[in-house]
Length: 459
Image (cartoon, rainbow, N blue to C red; front, side, top):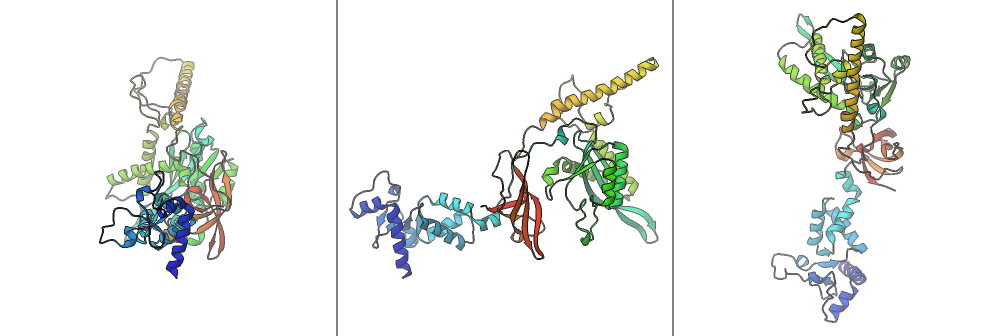
């Protein structure tokens, strides 16, 4: 009964799509030269079903269904149902597995490769297993990165560490403690300033801010990620955190008229300007620590190493080094920070008091003007191109079903959520969304960048 039903359905699907070919074969005529079935040498079996008559008829090892498979038209709904069925039977593997299962079952879908690929592209379970995260065209740079301003006016902040240091001698040996570092990165001149702290707490962080601003004030904007270092959302876990939303820190920022801006959670790409500096600091510091290996690392030694790391980073070129002998100086953050360039000092001349002030003013002004002129012409122009995410993609919409990536669990445990709200940028492209998911304790809403979402299906 089942086989008879299958024959009736297949025959009807073939009649809908290949009526002329079936009529020609029944009348004993050859197929039209424009027929898509001509290369397959089709014939009608004893049940009136179109089968492939190919070149494998003499094979003794293949089953009859593989030698003369049933022809299925690609534009018919039957083809879609067959692909879905055999795709599920191979546990949602790729196109090759699905096509192999169809052929082994005795079906030959015209244009099957393209049809299978198009259906697998919208398969929700395949997206859960192997779907790529979304991304959007790289956004324009914020004004913080392009506004010529005094060093450390616009600052990116991040914390890293810890390191174990020897603090004091006891009867049982040396007692160890930990140290962290707070890095302040100038978003315009690309200079860095590192402060070593004894603990990640609001009090220690305020002290590091006070030391930094005493040297580098005034600061207009601080930027940071929403990591656990700066958001006090992990107090119940017993983790060391700095809660920027604490009243003490808020009062300090308000007193100094400073704005603190957060990037979305898990959006490290949006803080690449200072994340890159963290990597540089770590690599240079690792090299220095190898040189002092075997010796006790104290708080004093760690602070000294951090100061040397800052000096190395701030003396690096921020533009390609020119081979032109007429411009031997390099453009580095230290040019603006110290108003000095490494060159031979000219001997002192007999100058009057007014000449000394005039000369000093001119030297500082010339160095500053030279820095900003080269900064505009060389460094800023290097930021024009988009190294990746070069094309606009379809925006996420409210109501889309997405998969939230979580690095701490396996992919099969990633939660499925519903896009509750989108946040278009100034160019109308969506790079951040609010997603509602169901947890054991009930519904929860998370703010995530699109680079952490996998689109499953849209309205």
